[in-house]
Length: 114
Image 1 (cartoon, one colour):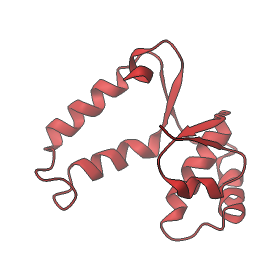
Image 2 (cartoon, rainbow, N blue to C red; image 1 turned 30 degrees about the vertical axis):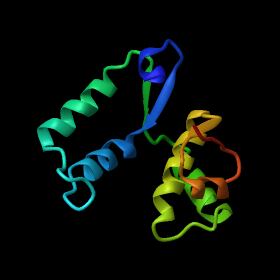
Image 3 (cartoon, rainbow, N blue to C red; image 1 turned 120 degrees about the vertical axis):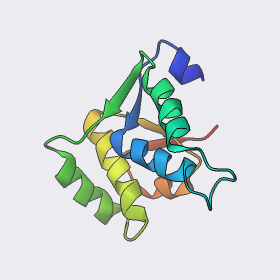
């Protein structure tokens, strides 16, 4: 809540929007899962934050993605993480708030845990 309601700029990679919807509507992951309407409404509230920036790929995304894949030895499910790293690095993001220790394998992006 501090990020969404505070004045400091914060960002979400565009890929996380679809991933959020996938997870919260998945009947094997949440009981009961969100309906599509509930999930979209919840995400809409987050996206309404005036300090939020949604990161989208630009010209440097592909070279940064291939670099992240190589440096992080990322394959399979870790490719999604490499996409997030590349997008963040392209946007000049210096730190990633995550509980996922897989991001520690990627140089150049500091991880912060709560």
